[in-house]
Length: 69
Image (tube, rainbow, N blue to C red):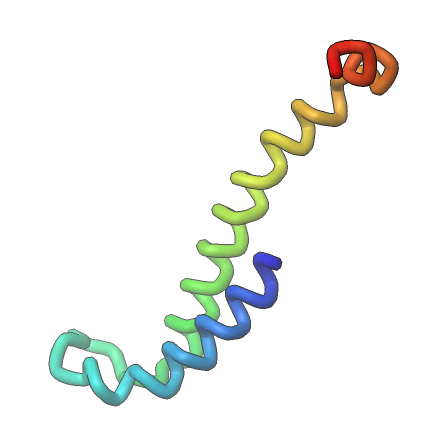
């Protein structure tokens, strides 16, 4: 889900970058290094945000979780 969002967002950002050309300082609208850096930062944030709850859920024993339902 995160990869699909990043891919769709990158495509939209690539095409929309021409519209925000006047807001960009010292960078080109379609600068590949800037796009890759943004994708890396957003990927790291997404992985961290999903890893913490997944690790917590994995530490629960299934039998105990089923008894509480």
